[in-house]
Amino acid sequence: MFNRFEDGLLRLVQLKSERGGAVNAVAVIEGDGLDARLVTGASSVLDLAKRAASAGTSLAAVVREAGLGEAVDLVAALEAGRIAVPVHHPDPAHFIVAGTGLTHLGSADGRDKMHKSAAGEHVTDSMKMFRMGLEGGKPAAGQIGVQPEWFYKGDGSTLVGPGDDLVSPSFALDGGEEPELAGIYLIGEDGTPYRLGFCLANEFSDHVTERGNYLWLAHSKLRQASLGPELFVGELPAHVEGMSRVRRGSEIVFEKPFLSGEANMSHSIANLEYHHFKYDLFCRPGDLHVHFFGTATLSVTDGLKTQDGDVFEIEAAPFRLPLRNRLARAAERPVAVKAL
Image 1: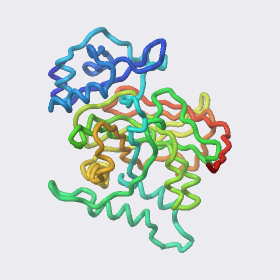
Image 2 (image 1 turned 180 degrees about the horizontal axis):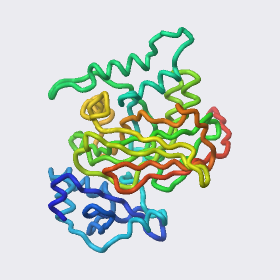
Image 3 (image 1 turned 90 degrees about the vertical axis):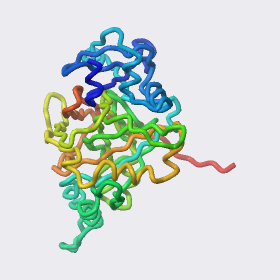
Image 4 (image 1 turned 120 degrees about the vertical axis):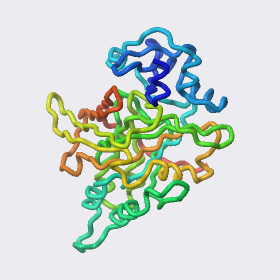
């Protein structure tokens, strides 16, 4: 089984304690099913990643050295709400959440519809940005490609795990799913970004606010986001195909495949990473980053209006476990600024 780590098939899952709910263990998914065992002495993925970065080795090597212990029933753990986000930081302020849009083939269509002016054939900024990616988003090795659209979503306090509610603020006009993949990174002590791996994600945005005015995009992204159960360690397949659903009670009100991986993208992952980590601000030692790579599939472009209680469901190979979250709405919170 350890030899499979060298093939890029290492999958890590963070587990919460049965009582307190805090992350206290890491499990490895074995083989081609859902069999899993605990990593001996590992209290978090961040702990393992820091060991790897400090030793100048790989996560697989650190897990191999630690060894595996008792078996874990992942299906039961997921149903019991004991699977956490695949990585967390004890200080959420040191976990940067950001992403890029208009990175996938076909992703411009929905955005273009939202931002199209009454001028008819007017080319929107969204379409211009998308075309720039098509032309220069996959540079040759050693070259720098065109920079993508970029947005900030918040810090680690905005991230929720599998089975948790995605809570839309009381002032939001919409809460819509964005099924995609995300990269997870740790900044080493010398400022080097290390990619831990990839996970399923629901970037979750307010598309009605964005549609109102393109300059409100930044507002529409300041929402929670969810990360899937497992961290896929290794190179991401060039073609990733999954399914996005919205369930309303016993009914499926939206179901559509989504594609990701570089074969379905207008930018290479390396180009997206460069244009994020080129900023010194994002190379602060000890910080974690999650970077959402974008999507081309949204229920809002098919006319669906989500409702509180809807359940978003995202699944895709090579990930074994699905990501499910229920849409909820926060209570209104008065905002009052006081002068000192």
